Image (cartoon, rainbow, N blue to C red; front, top):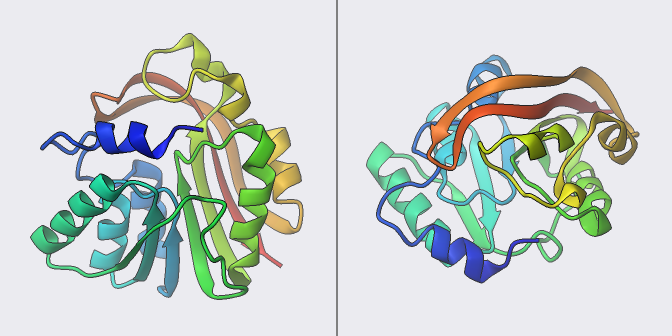
Length: 200
């Protein structure tokens, strides 16, 4: 796990280190879904939360970094949207049962020692019929320099994800290589996994 200090230092620059534009997978999927309450764990500088708020979603986000929240708040003001943003780590966030219509996990990498717990908390906070959307680096990412953790225990493969989300229906899954161009920290050929799941 990366520490609060790590993320505060990364987000300390004036530039938005992962850009201001939303993740491409989220950008293509979210407009086609019925709007409701959406949760963004580990949201950092707010690019995805701001995008969802601009579409009319009721957005909830959290991150352990105060610097990330400050930049997310500034981006929301720039885009003239509002959302709820709390300071919390992934284990202590209050995942209230059946409150969210959607959870979006965009490059949220957790050590395998806590990953299943965090993922099941995300499922718990979804309403029946709720959607979970995920994009993350796979273990094959270790051969590339386009971003992500260098610890294989923090990378995601579809087999482990299916187990974590075993109580959900898989609507889409894919392991693929893409050309990332989100920021200097996410640029170049990348090995990723994508999932869309629905809570039963």
